[in-house]
Amino acid sequence: MTVPIPGPIPQRKTIAAIATAIAPQQGSVGIVRMSGAEAVAIARRLFRAPGRQVWESHRILYGHVYAPLTGQVVDEALLLLMHSPRSYTREDVVEFHCHGGIMAVQQVLKLCLEAGAILAQPGEFTLRAFLNGRLDLTQAEGIADLVGAQSPQAAQTALVGIQGKLAQAIRQLRAACLDILAEVEARIDFEDDLPPLDEAAIREQLQSVLADVTEILATADRGELLRSGLKVAIVGCPNVGKSSLLNAWSRSDRAIVTELPGTTRDVVESHLIVGGIPVKVLDTAGIREATDQVEQIGIERSQAIAESADLVLLTLDASVGWTPEDQVLFEQFKHRPLLLVVNKIDLIQSPEQKAAIPLPDTELPVVYTAAAQNQGIESLEQAILSAIHAGDLSAADLDLAINQRQAAALTLAKGALQQVQTTIQEGLPLDFWTIDLRSAIQSLGEITGEAVTESMLDQIFSRFCIGK
Image (tube, rainbow, N blue to C red; front, side, top):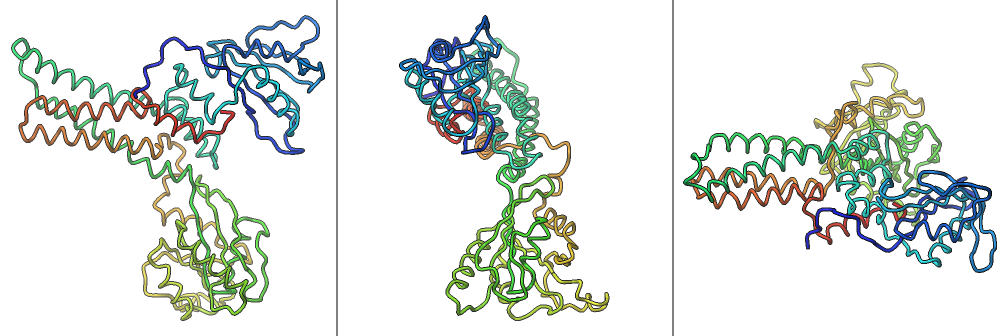
């Protein structure tokens, strides 16, 4: 079932949810949000504002939240009123700004539900904003991306989506396809009354749309990297300085460092930002034959982590050079994206000794570090960006970055447009042109929400937090 284009706002059940993160002794303010036709009426039953404060839209009231049945004060709070349609959902919205923590907001939410509201589903506030025409689907997804952003650049890219830049580009492409379809269908319906179809012009229009679709589609990998980040595993033999490398890179003492091999028994992780990309760095246990059962479990976990990492930093000791054990690890992980890190370079006395360090006969990038001296970290970061072909991600003018759902729809649209070109080349009748043109238009409409099913909306908004 396709969701209709938003028209007059329907009357839906009033929903309520806690809109801020809650934790004991954390956060000074907690917000309970309601949206729906009964939101203001419920607020009037629960909230008492002393004096002559006026209950009008976009005004903050001071007062207390009371339990209607007992008259007990639940919290001292502020109340924010936003009347339809000047609100996030384009419905009447009320927010109780309570004291932070757990109990106050939970008690206020409970009162709202007892007064007639129902608990909001994940993303239901934003879903209503979409259904009521406040947002299109790309803007809604941009809000989810902003909430989950792990770096300033990811946040900036999400803001571009919220501002509608992607939707504008997609709508222009869809409009161009609709124009082509109208030209073709007009020749089918009124062939005797119109001049012949300008096939060359149609080909040119199709090629232009295809080029724009391909350009936007090329941002999918960048978008996924900004949203999900990069998982980097530091692997190597015991005592090559993996933990020192993690500590130097994260500027902390996350991992225990000693001269004893096998100190790291489990995976230690740290979260960093490299060139605008969120990076989760995993310091793994030194991989070797271990007789200690606990160490062996750590080694097995390390191997599993390295196999699933986006990039493996194979680390070796410069003062020892390439060993048979390093070769074993190289053979084990060479099918993964790999970067060689030659650590403890400060123990090498001369450039000649550095050049003489034996390394495998490979074209893999090599970085020289002295983790204990905090040297070589910047070179390591640059090598990582180069290794994943993502150096342009740090550019300040990065704008569009589509997500996986949008990429899937664009891929279908691209395939349909290419099929139209093939149909034209094969000289098939105009009726055949319209089939794939309609398919492309449908796929482009799914991106912005102009042609979307209820099941698709459920899938998209289920990934939101409840208060959004």
